[in-house]
Amino acid sequence: SSQQRWYGPDNYKTQKPARRPEAESAAVGVRMQGARRYGCQAPGCGGRPLSLGAAQTLINLTGAGGSATTGTLHSHIGCSPGHPAVQSLDAAEARVIVGRFAMQRAAVLVRRGSCPRASGPWVRSHSSAAAEASAALKVRPERSPRDRILTLESMNPQVKAVEYAVRGPIVLKAGEIEMELQRGIKKPFTEVIRANIGDAHAMGQQPITFLRQVMALCTYPNLLSSPSFPEDAKKRARRILQACGGNSLGSYSASQGVNCIREDVAAFITRRDGVPADPDNIYLTTGASDGISTILKLLVSGGGKSRTGVMIPIPQYPLYSAVISELDAVQVNYYLDEENCWALNVDELRRAVRQAKDHCDPKVLCIINPGNPTGQVQSRKCIEDVIHFAWEEKLFLLADEVYQDNVYSADCRFHSFKKVLYQMGHEYSSNVELASFYSTSKGYMGECGYRGGYMEVINLHPEIKGQLVKLLSVRLCPPVSGQAAMDIVVNPPVPGEESFEQFIREKEFVLGNLAKKAKLTEDLFNQVPGIQCNPLQGAMYAFPRILIPAKAVEAAQAHKMAPDMFYCMKLLEETGICVVPGSGFGQREGTYHFRMTILPPVEKLKTVLHKVKDFHLKFLEKFA
Image 1: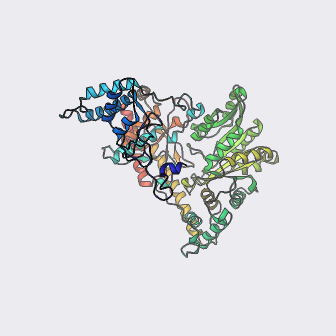
Image 2 (image 1 turned 120 degrees about the vertical axis):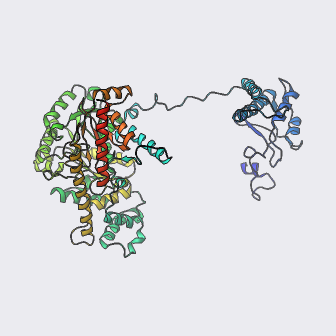
Image 3 (image 1 turned 90 degrees about the vertical axis):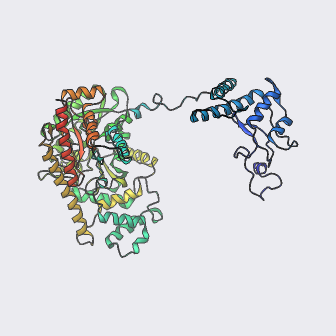
């Protein structure tokens, strides 16, 4: 058996296994060209590996075409002549060994920069060592590495076409600069401020206490007996755990999500909209992004002029263009009206769908409300017009509503598409297919890392519902911890419960603070010549329009960059502020923007805004 081979017949199962001959320098044999061994392979033999000197001697003994006998090999590896398990070694193979030793020696000598003074048969100049190595390698040349199966030319072209500006080249550059700062390389700033992404906690926002209490209890149920946690938090944690397999967040859930959490989501939607919601239409997801990409996978089909067209706003959140590229669908742009506070105009939707019909089948209309990156909040009348247009054109509606808690303007209010759809009457509410999305990542929670989210899909064909569940089952289930976080968002403390006052105080502080920062950002940007910023009605970003002089455009072209990428890269390199160029979101030709989050603490945000102002003025002067 293989065990007897390595233990030996006398010590089988009684002693530690002898070391495999190829594993240690004291073991016998020299491993050459795949599985061929030269030297004694007898179990337990104390013979040494074939040495360089022995190999050279064998070459001299056997001649150019000869081979070493078993006895000769025994004498040079120091094992017992009674051991027969020795392969022969011909002169050519021995030369390869010599050449490899010589090549190693040449490399060492080159590193040292000189040769040792000692003389002898194995001490040579690097030129002679290298020459011998080259000659030996001519006897048996090394094989060139075989071609890689996966290359840029052979990879999936749809994946190669995917771009995601929020974590694109400028963010990679920011990481490089951070590493340089850590190594002590001097910069005109002391830190990189990552204003490129809406990561609230990374920017210093404190977690909501109640949410973290319930999550702690769910994660470590032994805390349920602790008096340090309020009873309303314990009640929610017990309910979630009882619905989990083995009363543990570590178990899988149903592919559609934990049943009791879907029930809580449906109750939340019913309270918000005044319209009943069915838990069977709720699908818990890994953030909103997972739901959006899943629905688009179902919707994309056809080829040529019948290929599915997906209408997206410009500017847009780059997730949409990335998924469209991955699925090889057709992106159909409709432009938001920057001169009218980024409003959505139905006439622009009609233009876009009319032109798209020449080369694809427009089937999907995506809406982001409140807007990302633009921050506009749609009026109820606008939503009605959009729903009517979708009904008229037979479009599947996707309503991205992850910023529904983030409304700052006193003149604006969030209206869900589902609520307006049902208020428009049975003809619309029973026919328009709608998927709407919400997440734990934004709002007042900012719990991006939990990756919790849900989608509600209504008026879906029953057979397609089965296909959707099948598709979701491929990824088993969304993270159960994220599902639990989503439950706490839709089932927060209510008046009369122990945690309500602290919860509402923390929630209002976060949202009030964001409203102040939105106004501060708008006001300061609009004081800078060459920067124009629309009111930040909602979400958590500014998307100001910037003037880029013609000479700067030429400089950008020389660097093979989009002008606003050139601008943002210079901003990063000179101030340490990382923002995302507007070209990553889409913009009308000839206009330039950047997206910046308003999440930093107020004092840091003021510093950021003043640095942007100073940079912009210098930029205009330099390229005037």
